[in-house]
Image (cartoon, rainbow, N blue to C red; front, side, top):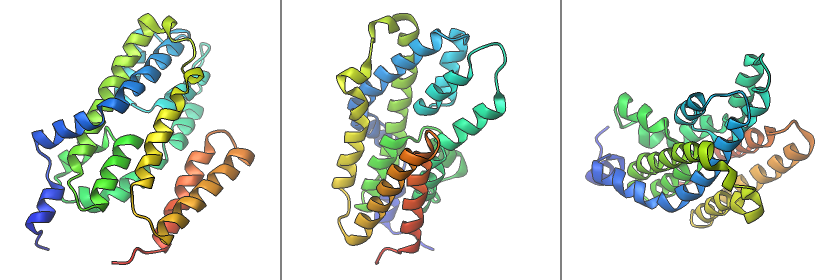
Amino acid sequence: MKVSENQQNIYRLSASDTLFGFKQLLPISIFVAIFGGAFGLAASQTNIDHTATVLMSASVFAGASQFATLELWKGSHIPFFSLFITVFFINARHILMGASLYPWLKHLSPLKRYAILLVISDANWASSFQAFNQQKPGIGLLFGGGLALWVFWVLGTVLGIYFGYMIHNPYALGLDMVMACFLLTMVVGGQKNMRVFTIWATAAISSLLAYLYLPKNSHVVVGAFVGGIVGFLWKSEK
């Protein structure tokens, strides 16, 4: 199928687009660095050496699951199976995030496509998905924004290892709400119709119920899964 010139602009990935995406996500990345510092501090208090801590942030790049693994990393024996299951379920939402971006990423070469997916997170996914739905270029937001988040997460981890004692309690300052507020603005700025409302409402309700009655962190997977199923069954009108 032939791709129009306008569609080619939406699917493009250039250095300027990547730089634009990097700059756009720079403000939220600063807050990510603070939590990276909190992780670096927490990791330094376990039996993980500093090099392994930085390598974990650079290769895994998943804050919630990295914090969760610290609880399993204590002691001389590491329960690898439990660690694997914990990381998988906390990050299972990335399966749905990747699937939602497939209509746009499929036009890229496999090398570019999977390089971009390496730095996908909630913030750059939400920004790029909003841009795509508005028929605007979003690949640069996805990749450049992801690089910004990744760089500051790793930088924050390094600073946390050596200067983490200065971060007493980031939650007391309300910094844990920054990402939630950012994602909320993406939702409010997106499409507004009964289908979108139903998807978000069912995802929120199911996530809340899972938080109350199911094992810890399962609400993330349940909410994403239920919302994804509703969106799949209720096709959008062309």
